[in-house]
Length: 229
Ligand SMILES: C[S@@+](CC[C@H](N)C(=O)[O-])C[C@H]1O[C@@H](n2cnc3c(N)ncnc32)[C@H](O)[C@@H]1O
Image (cartoon, rainbow, N blue to C red; front, side):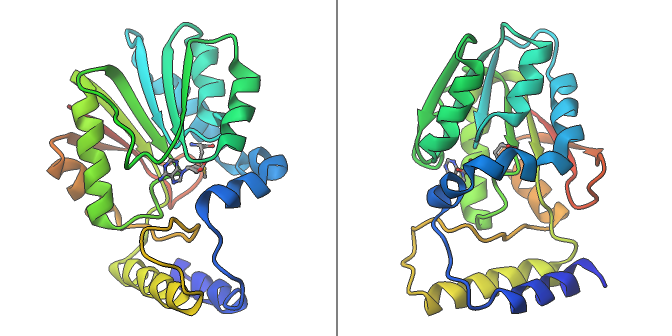
């Protein structure tokens, strides 16, 4: 079975399950969240290794409980981190692990929060942007670009669709489910709508970055992208 066939089967099995709002989705699963993300542990280690040695400031968009920050702080305990997430429950867990670090946490929507200008050496977004349309992604890539210093690095690791057919299929299914459950536009729901890799890269490049695909570590649908300002 290819990825799309597996997804179609899963969508069929879950078609009667209501869509859940994004922040509530993660809060409800806080006790099992880190275990659920363990298949990505090699990526968290890798992010720790990828942070440039001279980086002093880092923006983590959709930081959650800070699984990537666990590894980044292991390499760079002094780095100053700003983390943004919709879920206070996720941020509370992060704070409880790293309260002794130089950590600024913002509970809010990263589409609305200001990231500042020329403020960060590095920005990361891991497994957080695969729920949004291309227009929204472009908006956030532009904000990240603006927030980085000259030659700053943006690292994105995320779920990628294997084909245009899969990308379109999932957006159509989301539309259908939102109509069924009468969810108004502008409410974030937890439903995966990944873009294809060429689509994702084109948006990052449109925001001004030069991109490089670093590859995968154990998950073929999760490439790591390095983008330089
Ligand atoms: C799968 S988790 C990834 C968290 C972390 N990066 C990791 O790898 O463990 C996705 C996170 O993105 C956050 N998120 C989703 N949409 C968001 C938005 N619009 N603004 C801020 N955070 C958002 C969720 O609350 C959740 O904590």
